[in-house]
Image (cartoon, rainbow, N blue to C red; front, side, top):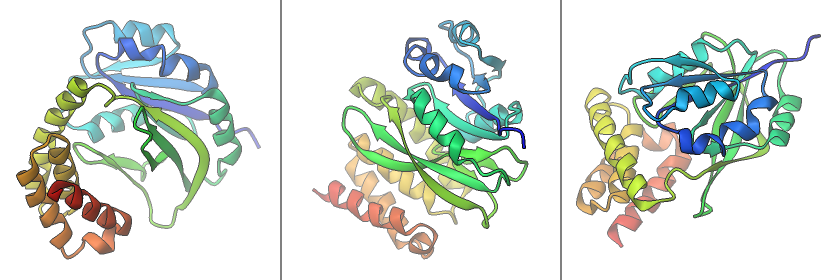
Length: 244
């Protein structure tokens, strides 16, 4: 049986200062690199091409899932790993993922994201089979959607994330996400997940009264505990931070 192929997919905008830390160390570990650029003005596209990426230019759609789905639509590998411009994975970690890939292509793989320098750790779906029934959903803090009967495997792989390292940059991203989350909450009033993310974003922006309102709504939503018990517990921790 031929070896399974693995694509790296990224969505970027003005990430030229980060590519030497994110894309360059890992590019050769993948069978292909697909970059969707949403309007860079700093030479990100040329730098990504120089590192071996195939670059697709699109206007920013104000929807992270839509942009990420464009990247996977252009990929050709059996499996896809997604990274952002402020993420790093080591080549040896990519090799570890390759050894775990399911030839039936019915498994998603979780990796550990490490937020630096804070050290916060969270587990995320990072690797998935390229199939039409696997895609992203959500304007911001997009989620990977896949058939319910897929297996889930946590691989001992760390991905560094440094995008919120500088307070000014973190605030800029928070304000950008705030607009997208506000629109998403209006569109998806039956979905508690955007309420959680909106409350979390408002907390990070230190808008405590508004954060309390949305975290309360998330925790009182009748489906929050059922849909995602760990997120429901984390919502209580965030609310405690707000009250403190």
